[in-house]
Image 1: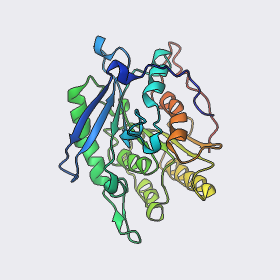
Image 2: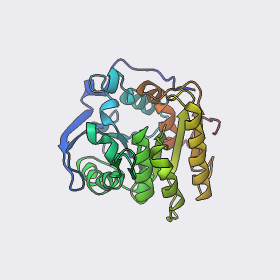
Image 3: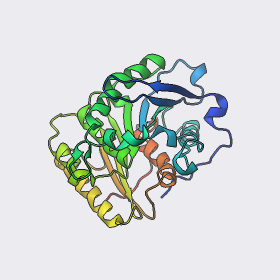
Length: 285
């Protein structure tokens, strides 16, 4: 079921709650990239520190003028609505622009011999954990522990987000893995999951649509393989893992934006006084 919350006509950018940090440079990657930051309603008039969600392909999140195909996620609208209704914690969303032709190399965990590219995902993860996160923590009022920091993305962005969570569990404790490109290099990411040694378990949202690409059934089957690998390493559905197949959803920005609200409610729920999160139920894979 797609997120169906009310959508406001006033967007965060109209209230100057979208901040751009152009050409963020890294010691680990060759190309600078823009960083765009969403701040929750009331941020400037509050002293409260906020959890943070770092998302890949940042140009697709908040602005149709920069988004692929002119379709953004409307992530700011969704977050505003859920925050104002008290369904999620007020949070900061950090969008990391991709760098075009280098996107594939930076977003993949291994070099694919047939494609002759890829494998810089570990450097990208290091950039997020050791350069970008400290920068955001200095610039904004953040809650710095892993329990209050997440990383996520869609497609290849989901792939590198999963890799980042596996490599840096002490930095990122919440993962949003939407339509991950698990097919990359013969599903090499599954070997990384199977080799995971830490006793820390991030809270993971994992999904795929039933209408993704030319072989959607293969994508769903891959998702179930990943779910199985995570369960073997100690993740538990209903506790720290939610895996879902989204009926009718394609592999595109509109589909990811439509369920972003559910992702936020699972990863950053506002706990009620009775101790329950109030997050919506949803069937598993």
